[in-house]
Length: 324
Image (cartoon, rainbow, N blue to C red; front, side, top):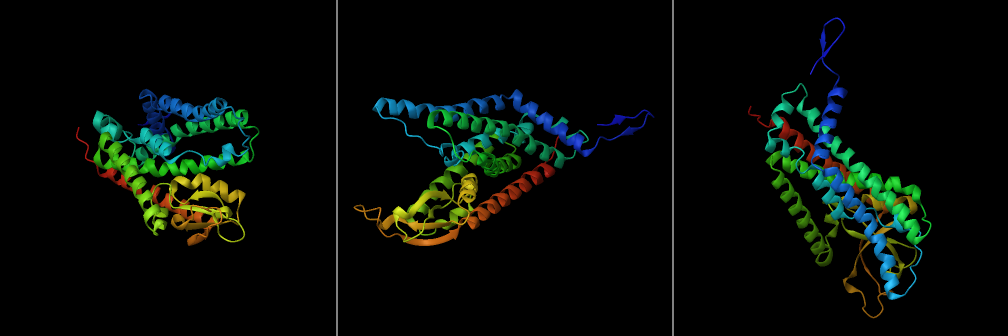
């Protein structure tokens, strides 16, 4: 790819020009494959259905729907399964699909480095996902205001969006790594899905049957379940909002930290609770952490996974043999 000057000389386009050419190529690929349209439809459904169901259900039972000024900010953003599914749809065939269709040959024979191709594809995936998440939050804000009344702390919505993007990038880079190594979209989808299910099941087992739930903090997913502790003795009545510690929980932790910067998160064993008086039963404290430490750990773990999985994808693409 060269450009002619007025003197007849040939010059190579800048790295930025080549990079954005790859980004545009990938965005057009996503549009042709109907990825963007499909995610928009799913985002609309995810935002509208919960908002519509609550008034309908309360109308059926004949009770007024209570106002909830924290519906948008207090919802914790988007659930882990939704993050994973959006990541899966966005990148499952981003690299592997090129090998399967044979388009990898003309792509890599152009004067664009494989590093630029990889960075362009990953950036295009984020660009594809960003308007989908923005639309979802816009609907939540408008719908939440209509259904639950005026919403508080809406200035935190962009912060929640940032956290969700970071969380989604963990799953995106994982799936991209599997697809880049295997060169199979099917294996990328299956590998990512089996990883998600395995982590989800093991998280439940560790949380219920083991005192080692702290391990979940360092695995992709929701993480260990903690509770923001109020002042006074540690009882169920003195524990407020729950918060996860994993990579899927970054948005919720960010919001909680801005609202309660000096809070402490208590990780407790609920197995010994009295079934008669659970609100006053003493709890077994496994450990406590400042909320800031929980936030910094979750972000650091997420960034580590993003870097490691990205390096695996990049190396696999760099070393891939292309047969004409």
